Image (tube, rainbow, N blue to C red; front, side, top):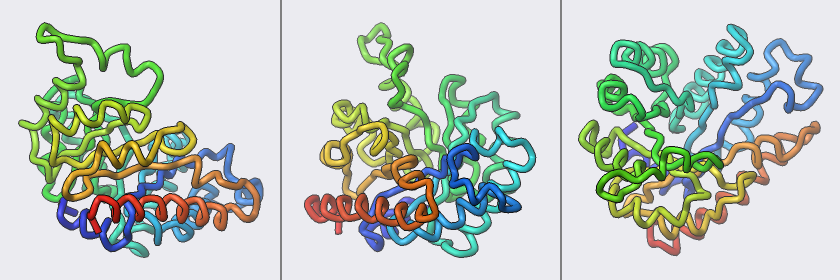
Length: 276
């Protein structure tokens, strides 16, 4: 999926919501744990419940890898289900990979050939040769960590270099040479919304994947006001606030309601900014 197709998908759905499938076996409803594949049983119902209100899904691989081979099978089944039932959805592997070129090329093969993701999150610390192998796949995306929302983000991301600029700005500037805006997105945490104006000056055309709305307390309105570009340019992720809106038998219905509420807010913001 290229950038124009993603924007058209956003316009059609009147939403820039990405639902994070951070499916923790310990948090799914008790009755689902009796299923042959509990993670997939949960994911399938969540996907069906929210797909009309979102444009993307983002499985966080740690929740699947922690269960070994069975977890990876659940992940593959989840991706295949989305592809078969809702092929218009954008699927992000939240893997946060970052390794030297030869290893990176194998990660790219795993996510783009074997598992059929549209995009994968990548850490930039090892530089260009750890990122370029992912860009060899046409209409697939690197989602580069730039400014994250965790409490220790300042340990490295705000360190200033000789020119007085923080490290995350150098990541944004340098990485634009590695891939065009049709293949590169950036992770910017919603709790860092005050920095979005500066970020948009550096990367005006790129999509930003923005976690931190909902359970982490980020402001959707601030993210939109400071982060929108002429093609929306945002995928705002919500995970726990949607998929764990209930842990009872009504979990799917509650997820629908939570996703709908966010979509309605997003539709209003898209109209306000004349993007639909």
